Structure formats: C-alpha cells, structure tokens
Length: 289
Length: 236
Image (cartoon, each protein chain N blue to C red):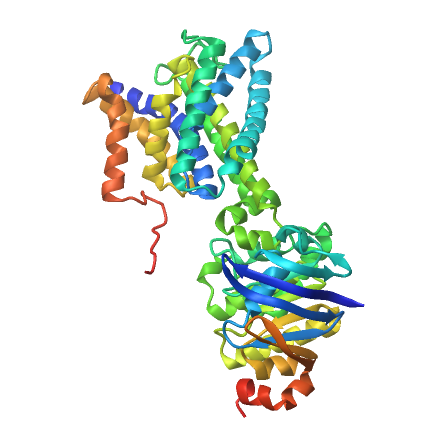
C-alpha cells in the first residue's frame, strides 16, 4: 500500500512535467492544427542553455528565468524563420519541417555538448520535505507545473493579448477584421510554448539526466497526455499529463515492469485514437458533407 | 471629399474573375448601398476593400491608398467589416467578442462606455454577455457582429447582408439602429443587401452591380423610381 502511494505521488511529479509539455503541444495545435514533433527537442536544447548558464556560475533561479526568456525568443524565431515560410504548404511538408527541426536540434546539441550524459542540478533541497513519500524535487516539479499552468490560465483568460491570441487561433479571418496581427500572435504562441517546454525540460533533467535524447520518451508521454485530454483542450492536457504520469509509474512498478514503461504511452495513444479520438475533454468535430 | 474612392477595381478567386473594373465613391457620413443579384460581386467588393482578396485597381480611404495594405492595417484606419456569415468568435463569450472589436483602441475608458452603449442598443446581448457566442441565436449573432464592428469606433462600416436570416421585425429594428448610429455618430456605411427595398429606404444613394460592373448609380430615390430596378429588384 505504501509502495503504491509512493508510486502515485512520484507519478504525479513526472506527470506534471508531461502536463507542461502537453500544454505546449496543445497551444501550437490550437493555433496551427499541427503537432510540433520538435517540441521536446526545443525543450532539451534550452535545458542545455540553462546548464551552460549554471556552469558559468549563475545562480539557479536566475538561470531558470533567463532560460525561459531565451526559450521564448527562440520559439518566436523558429516560427518566424522556419514555420512561416511553409505556412501554406501541405500538412506533410510541415510535418517534415518539424522532424527536420527535431533532428537538427538533436544533432547540434550533440555536436556542442557531446552525447555524454550530464547531471543537472535541482533547485530544491536534498532532504524530503514531507517524510519519505515524495522527494523535494518531485514536490517542487509539481509546484512549478502548477505555477506555469496558473500563469498561462491568467494570461489567456484575463489579458487583452491573451484574448487576442485565443481569437487568432480560433478564427484568423475574423481576428484580422478586428485588427489583430494574426502572424505575430502565432509567433507569440510558439514563444510561449517554447518557454513552457523549457520549464518542463529543467524540471525533468535532474530526474532523467541531461543528454540530447532525453526528451524522446517524454515527448511521447506528453503526446499521449495531450491525446487523452483531447488535443484541443488545455485543461484536458494538464489532466492527461498527471494521469499518464501516474499510470506509467504504477503500471511500470507493479504490472509490466520498468522496461515496458514506454509502451504504456504508445498503448494509450493507440487506445485513445481507436476508442475516443477526441479524448476525454476534446471537442468532437462534425463536418457536413 | 469622398471618404472612399474606388477606381477600376478588379478582383477574383484563382482564375475566376469576379470584379471587372468597378468604379464608385462614398460620401463622408452617408449610407451607400450596393445592390445586385447573387454573384454580382457585392461580397467580393467588400472583401477587396479590406484586403481579404487579391485585387487590382485603386482604393483610397480618406485620400490614402489602401489597396496594397493588409487587412489588419486597413482595420486600424477605422474600417469595420461585418462579414457575411457574421464571423463571430463562436467559442468566446459575447463580451469577449465585443472587447475584441475594440482591440486596437487605446482609449480604455471610452471603450467601457461603448460596451455599455452596445448593451443599450441591443439589450439581448447584455443578457447573454457571459454566454458563448456560438450558442446565440442567428439574430443575436447578427447584432453581436454589428456591435463588434461598432466597438472599433469606425469611420466606415462595411455591412454584408446584415438582414440575412433575420425575422422581418428584427430587420426593422436593426436598420433603425444603423440609421441612428449613422445620424448621431456620423459613421459612414457601405451596405450590401439583397433586400433592395429595405436597403434603399436606409441608404442615401446606391450602386447597382451586375456581373462585376456598376450598371447604375444614383440617389436612392432615383433608383427606386427606375423601371429596371423596380422590375428586377423591388418586384413591382
């Protein structure tokens, strides 16, 4: 029983990280109706930047904030320079661009930082805060996730810019008709998604260690999370993230063993697509023909 | 000086040409109607005016060339378009839709006052302010589309079939409000309508389009008396 509780709590911690990355996927999906396969590698790359900053002697939280800001700029630039030129290209062409971005970021990270696994510091104390249930880092990761989610919610719900971004994602033509610069809203969305991904990367790196391939599995879990919640529903993505995290941990510990953990994500993806393609909370789209 | 001047306007979709050299002008403060049958190019004209379709020719708004500008820049000059199909943000609330209408304005205080003014014009919208726009009835959505355009504090309003799908009583109410807005706030209007009788009642002058050309122009009274217009569009 105690072991189960521990696994559930640990699952919530990694689930929070999946939730953040799933949220980033959903933000891009809502605006472009495409899943950014490079989201994980963007997060990985920015985590390396954080590592460099910390290694150069910068205090952790300063490096954290600076990395999030740099990730935002990076996301905006990626949209402007890489995604914008293929705006009107067929879906498959854009998917190829995403995959190219994934491979390029992965290789460049390996080229600069080598493929040797590095440890990444956690800003939270070594000793558990609340007994033996949860390490401080796990607790901290959940906290960071919640802060990220609340900040995003507040931004989209209560600021004029957030409202304009939602409008631009929903109905670009009408958005232009009220004077919204839709192109910039998309770029801003990419920036925010990259910033959220960076936070997720820095939270997961102390657990999985830093290497250019660290995000591969995590993106898969995030993708499963986004699908479970409904790929167009941000709350669903957060819920899905926590759910996938717990499932993965509990099943891995007690049912299928750690070696098969990743197949939980794949099973969820296939299951959702087969049984309920719109996820738990996604909107069902009906088209008249 | 004319508020809007259009010269030799050509536009179309892909290889299909819809407008074949349109010329017309709009007086400041006036309501001008564009009449014509389905496919005459009325909607395309409005879309070309605010940069939503590729067009050749000259469009001047308040003396400034706007034909090469982007939609959002034209909107920022004070041109509000109420598109056909209304174009409301279905998943946002009524109030969020209205606030978006004023997105480009900096005078926050006046915006809040305008919001209340819209609820005064259309009390139904006040009742539905927290409701998703997609759940409003057709008539309410049309009122929302018109109010959202007014929230821009526009100098020119382009109205694409505002009467479409509305009950006759609602059409009357809407046209009365449009007249009041025109008279009190001096918002110029370009009105596209299939309901020619109603449009000519509201407008000061009108242009009749046929297959992408202006075939007749004049004051509303002149057009009402024109035999061809009466037979084809007024039905008497």
